Every structure is written in C-alpha cells, then in structure tokens.
Picture 1 (cartoon, helix red, strand yellow):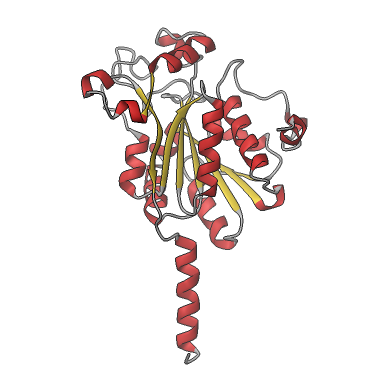
Picture 2: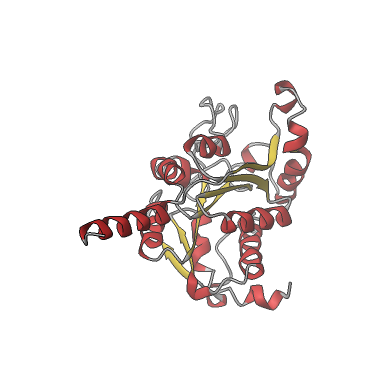
Amino acid sequence: MPNQEVFNWLRTRFFPHIWCPGCGHGIIMHSLLRALVDLKKKKSETVIASGIGCSSRMVGYIDACTVHTTHGRSLAFATGIKFANPELTVVDVMGDGDCTAIGGNHFIHACRRNIDITAIVMNNNIYGMTGGQVSPTTPVGSSATTSPYGAIDPSFDICKLAEGAGASYVARTTIANPKQAEQFIKAGINNKGFSVVEILTHCHTQFGRRNKRRTPIDNVNFFKANSVPLNKAQEMSSEELADKIVVGEFVKREIPEYTAQYLSMVERVGGLRNGK
C-alpha cells in the first residue's frame, strides 16, 4: 500500500502530536488509516467521532469529517450522524474509560441497537490523560493514582460485554500486531451493524511506570508474551488463561441493522398513511 495514500489522510498542520513518545495510539491510528485506504473510502463520506482523552485526540490528526465531542458521549453523536446520513462510514474512537465508564450506557445501547458504527476501543487499562486513575479495565492488583495499594474492583471484559449486549462483530488484538488490528478494523467497517474492535495498548507514563512496564518496548514485549489466539485459548483451562490476552474475532453474526430497520418502518408507515 503506498504510504502517500495514508499520508494524505493526515492533517499535518497539527503535528507533532501530543501523545507521549512511544504511545501505542499512533500505531492504532496508522492501522485505521491503512484500513480506510485499503477499503477505498472517501474522506467526504467518512466520519470519525471521539470523546475526551488521549485516544480521542486522534480525530484532530485525521483529515476526514471529524467530530471531537464530550466525555463518554461520542456514540450518541455518532448515532445521530448515522441516522442523518446512513450512507456515511462512521467510526468512533474511544478509550477504555471513555467507553465503559461514563460512556457505558451509550456503549451498551449502541451494541443492543446494532447500529452500523465501528467502535475502536483503545484499552490501556488506565485514565491516561487525567492523571492515572483506575479505569473499568484496570487489572486487579494494579497500581494507579487512585489505587496506590492495588486495584480491587473486578475489571470489565470489553469483548464479552459487547457480545452480551448484542454487537454483531466483536474482535480483540494488541498494538504488538498492527496488521491484525488493520484486518479487524476493515472487518468491522465492512460489517453491516455495530462493530467493536478492542485494541490493547499501553500508557507507560501513567500505568507502566507504576506496574513494572516502564518503557514502550516493555509493553510491546508484554503483549507479545501474553497474547493467545482464540483457537488456542479454546483448548486451554481457565487456570492456563489467567492473566492472558485472548485475541481474535469473537462474534461475527448477521443481525438486522438499526438504521435500515428504521427507514423501512418510516416507508411502511408512510405507505399506510397514504392508503397503500
């Protein structure tokens, strides 16, 4: 894939970016842009929405139709955009706290509706931008500014949450495998329904330095050493899977898409009113 095509999707006037050197968010952005280029998407027909957080700054760097919204509410904005123009490709980029804490209800109901939006959840297990507080995905025992003696809250499994709530495509990978991230993002965009692509990344500034993963490469090596493909995980015991990261496509199912159902209802009701 020509790098120039990917480069053309960048707002270079806003560089250098604000992410810490070695942050995995840049890897995710590159995977997203490569997916959009490979799918031959047009900037004028592509919407990237975000909320608040380090991950949400991504929309400032992408030269498409972008909207930087409020914390946890980006899926509500993305839903309105999709309703207004169902032909648009709509992608929502979120962090783990942005998505599953303040935005948890929006996330659950977007899954339930199966609206044609691709949610890319950048899970770094921490609130990175606001000071390193515990998030809903912080592993038990991990240190954070709000858990100096170790987190005790059980953490969310974002993929299981999405599957249980009704999303029609659910996948997980890590920044240690950017080509797989690109593959899953493409599959999510191609899916006619709500797609969730969880990508485990790192915040070595806020999480890593408190949890023996101080450098970017420490985190990449951690992901490589602890990732288990789904087909292998299915043959392992729960004890063997403890603290492992299961990666792969968990859900691929055909379910009626929400905007299509809504437009069909409008047409049907209009026909009834006109005596058809």
